[in-house]
Amino acid sequence: MEHITLLLGIVIVTALVFDFTNGFHDTANAMATTISTGALKPKTAVAMSAALNLVGAFLSVEVAKTISGGIINEEGIRTEVIFAALVGAILWNLLTWLLGLPSSSSHALFGGLIGAAVMSAGWSSVNGSTVVSKVLIPAVAAPLVAGLAAMLATRLTYRISKQAGEQATSKGYRAGQIASAGLVSLAHGTNDAQKTMGIITLALVTGGVLAPGANPPVWVIVSAGCAIALGTYLGGWRIIRTMGKGLTDLAPPQGFAAQTSAATVILASSHLGFSLSTTQSCSGAVMGSGLGRKGGVVRWSTATRMFIAWGLTLPAAGLVGAGAEFLTQQGTWGIVLTGALLVAGSGVIWVLSRRRPVTIDNVNDLDDVNDEPAGVVTTAIAAVTPPPTGSAVAAADDLKTTIPGPDTEPARPATV
Amino acid sequence: MNIDWAALGSVFGVSLIVTVALVGLFTLGIVGLSKRESAAARGGSATLAVTGAYVCFAACAAAVAYGIQLIVA
Image (cartoon, rainbow over all chains, first blue to last red; front, side, top):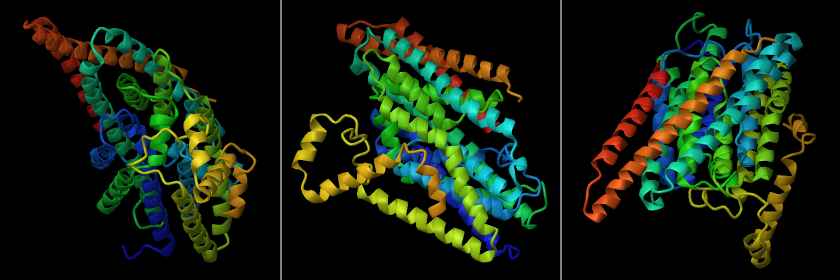
């Protein structure tokens, strides 16, 4: 390991940080419905998901050969480009987490890679048609497939179980839901931890530490598995709340149908050769199960914010990645500055998140999930809150106004 | 532009059928088991329903095992 340069060290650490954000960003996919229907206690749910993520990281021997699956031309990719891409992906992951919006970590990484590659080698390094076929079409297809399946399954399960009492069935639904959630966690561990291993391995190969085509060293596998499991265990409670409570109200049968649909879509898609994003499949399944129940509602304003975030993922992460690549091109001080900006940006987002923390204690509280049910409760709270809390609410409103602004969002890289 | 519509179509079809079938089976199992409780409350037994329920659960367990196999492979 004595050949590892400063840059390579930074890239490895950054890749592990990305892995970590990936973990807590995507806990929601596996566990949001399980937590919101009460099938598992929040802590138990994330612990189980983390354990399965870790197991998943060791299960598969096939490590991702490419980072981007052909979206960019990875021939002769420089280590700085990987670093810049990771910076873009991490910051976008953190920002969407702050806003509690589920968005695809893979797409954030793709976006960062595209931005960094364009800045580094021009537009020709991006394979436009692969972007369409691997990112854009799946982004539309995933929620549709999963949503339709979940909706039909929800209808069916309500019809069949009508004669049985709710009391008798809810325990069974919970067991089924836990099984489906376990499958999603396991699949996530194999896919996404593999991805980080692929990045680190590629960086090591680029840096000349490993021979091309070499398998990742054990410490890479262990550290990537641990980073994603730790992230999962800490739990992205903001996103869990949006997915489990914010999009729709889930009863145990719906949670079961949604989770089963998500697990099926994820497994079917990755093994039939048309990979669909886990996050988008899960969100779609949750909405589908919301539509499938009689009298069920989908909160379209929350859903719309989520869709906007999906649309912005690629360009926003791309712009940050491009900005970071621009800095790293300036030489060592640029790389150090980029690293410092990444730390500072993450710190700011973390501080902002403390203003209105979401923890295991309030993860299932619907009141302040989103601004839209400005009904009795919200108004009552607003009426009785003393000034300090009032300013916190105002601050939160400030945050909210920045969410859908496609114009303000891409401006971010300039300041980062 | 090379979009694999056939793969997308089969993902769509397989996901739809498998999800609905699994959820349906599992619900039948749950309903079958709940018959046992109501039968026990009446003092009788519901052997057929319970056996059917276990068959359903076994099929679901097999599907989960297949899923794990897909993940590992």
